[in-house]
Length: 457
Image (cartoon, rainbow, N blue to C red):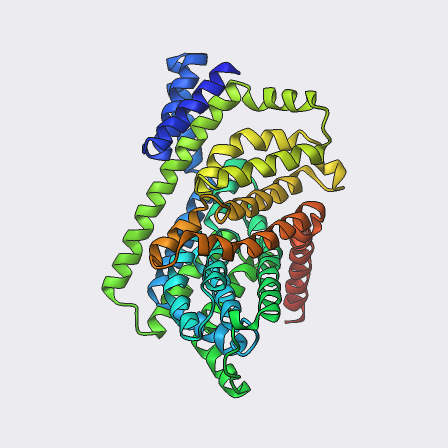
């Protein structure tokens, strides 16, 4: 226990000192395991874990979705998504803010990054909202909160991370994120609606666009929307595996960029290079996390933590609330990726031993899926939580003329909506598990239909 705590403290010191997170976790895990079991055992363990991890399913999936997102990002989709959302929502109270949130959700579906979504939408949406005299608090709050959707709405890189670390079904994790993502968007719409009905001057209505023009606006984004629906729909009905869906997504992104006249050699080279660099960086972080996780388990840190928590005589939900508070606080300091990689090795065994499957009347495998969505949602909240909040400082760097206090004031109502959404997901796990639970039934029905069609033909 003492070795585990000392190792954890040293790893945090190295990370805060600026050492690459993957390196800090690998060094801590390697030498910590060597201290406990010997150098030869640590060398053997590190080699085995890295080899096994590199052969895992998620490692083939991650570069494909990164490449798909990078190709679509270079296709300058963000402006068209915002324009289309504004065409449909701009005439409503706070319509531009709602259009920003909707565009964030659409961009998140092909990007998978909270920071990239925030920076992109800040440059796209903020000038328009200022032109219509939107209050900076409402504008920045909508951008910062909408940006967090980048790590939840599938295909999410963070969910791939979690799937690799916990050896869970990545396809089901993607599907499980759909309803929580929609709840996020609708709850943000509700917040904007309340704010602008109480004080209409904070978010003036825009001009109503004729229905014909609204339908025509879909031409600019229908391709990527169809791609998104085909990728997730194909996974859901069992028509394609997640890896096959990723490959189809890359092909569809290439066709989309080609159709927009933006598939140049330079753009393709940039997308490939960026995907390779990001994949290599993420792979190394995962390797470090695997070795660090082995050390933490060898030191019995999760087991001792569970014993300590049990001594407090809390209910399972009480323990879960403590874990969620910890995630929100730590999310203010760490990026979502770092937070998941650092904490899953400790909290995943703990949550698995709480007996939540009996409380929620589900299976242990479903608890793994549900917990993955919960910690991603909590990591999202941490990205906008005062006094730090990563998204806030990213937004501040994009808008130097806006004070931090203005951004934080704008975030407060969206933060309240996030807490409400978290409560729904925690106390009503069916909002997460309904679609994954029905995947197998859909696959069986599709198989029966295909066999029936073959017989008819």
